[in-house]
Image 1 (cartoon, helix red, strand yellow):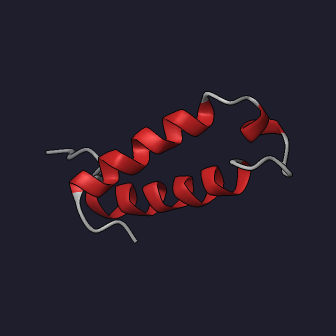
Image 2 (cartoon, helix red, strand yellow):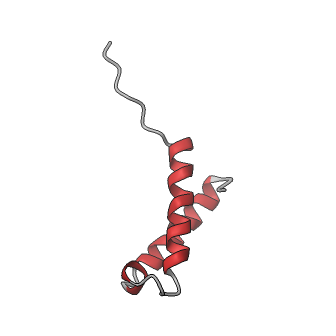
Length: 59
C-alpha cells in the first residue's frame, strides 16, 4: 500500500527504470518483470483512490 505522495513518486520513478529495460516487458522470467507488475498494481490502486477522475457535471 502506498501511504504518501512521496512514496507514490518514488514508486513511479522505479517503474520508469523498470520500463526502460525491454526484457521486463516481454519476459516473464526477467528479474524486473514481477516487480514491475506489482508496483504497477500499487500505483493503479493508489491513483484510483487519490486521483480518481470524477464524471463531468451536466449542470
